[in-house]
Image 1: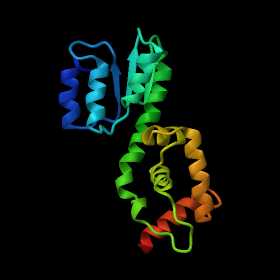
Image 2: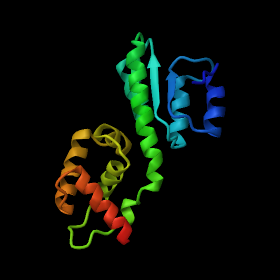
Image 3: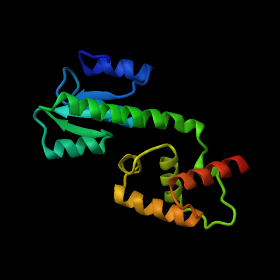
Length: 177
């Protein structure tokens, strides 16, 4: 864990290396945490960012989520809860980092199967990278329920009986292409 005195110090380090996760307070010296979040989001910063505030409100939380925060957490919070949420995010981030080793779904062909839509391919890419429905929804800007619907359509189109079968189909297609 590394702590920073202000947003400028955080930005300097964050731009030189990618931490596994960022816990960012809205009220920090210099630029606000929301301004820092906007900058990182504008740069497609890959690490999950949690916003925290003791004086947050619903519009502030919505603003943070729209600008790339994985979650908005109000103070006071229990240490065990924040640690669990950070660990979950770090695990998801690690899985996404492995995504570069996984096949690019957009280039795969599934002969004899109904073609996937662009959105279904995006959802499948998220799924094969290990993202949960909630994470995939946030990444793609759609609800987790819509992700579930797309996943059901993908499985039907590719003839997958379950998640493991779907991964097998994708891996087989990646070796064939």
